Image (cartoon, one colour):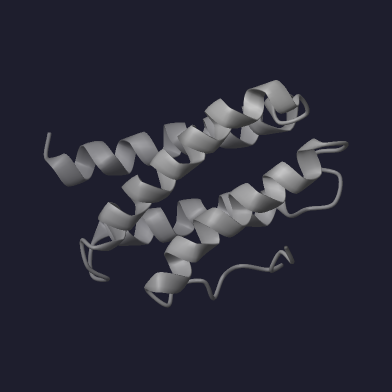
Length: 113
């Protein structure tokens, strides 16, 4: 398996983890440090993937994944309580990576800090 194929495959898994676990884990502040580390690591991996160039499957998959995560996390009712602000930060962090390469056109709602 090529490196790009492995990265492409892992993005789907990471996306599911983010979207399934974040509403539950972000409700408790004691989880935020680990979730923040995970988010920063994800953003770093995304940055590396986006450097692969626009004409690659890895670039397209990364844009699609980050856009989907940001859109879902910004939906009203996705999470409640303390987790709302944390999920907004996660969404903004991932959107920053798309903005760096001018690829955030599919984002439906921009979060306000």
